[in-house]
Length: 356
Image (cartoon, rainbow, N blue to C red; front, side):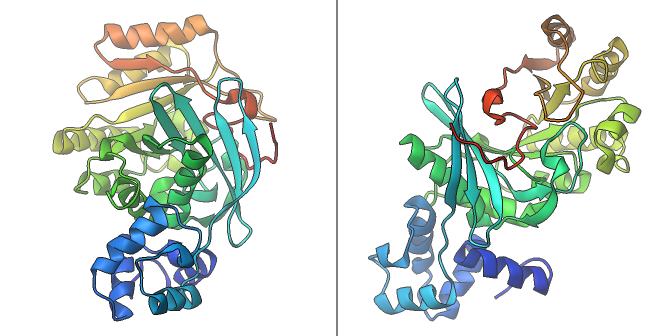
């Protein structure tokens, strides 16, 4: 059965994630390799993700012999909640332990008529963005597709509500784990899986240009969010040193091509940091970057991160950025962070064990 990546990483991931390591195509290959008709794949996906089964014994419409074979050769693991914290605004953050002992955080954000789940794609992160708590952890490993879907299912069960939106904005760089992230989004989108509309599934990236181009060629209409944080090259290099070799000019042209090819509007995430990227010169550069391309700017006042001296600018400055963008006919929104009081907001996830 074919699997992406090196043989060593494949074996490691299968060992740690079991059947949750496989994409839809790989599950189909598995079913066929076991001598079963292909319709079993849909049944298996429905049990694993649509119903969130915790054991093969629950899969009543699969033959008993098949269930036994799957249990022996492709174990079914589910994450364990180590800790949960609840924000004053209703946001809930979960610290989850996976089968191999690795831990990740995921966040549930309720609003009237909607439940958004911010899920992680990696254990830790190798990108090292200067303002992000996750970046201080380094990278332990990437997550399997099912380990991502499990996060969404777990949060939905805890809220007693269907997840209407899911965003790959938790720990990790999704595009450094591209194949598994896309496989997870497809399980979330599938009618046999979570049944979430493609446009309600967002993948966020620091701005890996080759993978943005790759996403543009995918058939699904997943939403793209790009962490920009500065349109001044020197400032962005300081904030996001791992992206220094991918210049802003090239990122802008790639986003322009993405919008023209897909007809979809990517979001540009901009964490406002006092006396770092909130000057008039930074604003002018941002305006110039956005002119002529399809985009929506999300302005996010910096969330406090432990041991960091950086802080958000005064609200009047954040409003000035929003107003200037809108006046220049660039769609922009000033976001209010959810879950900041439990370290569950953007840039704060650092696998802290805290309960509320």
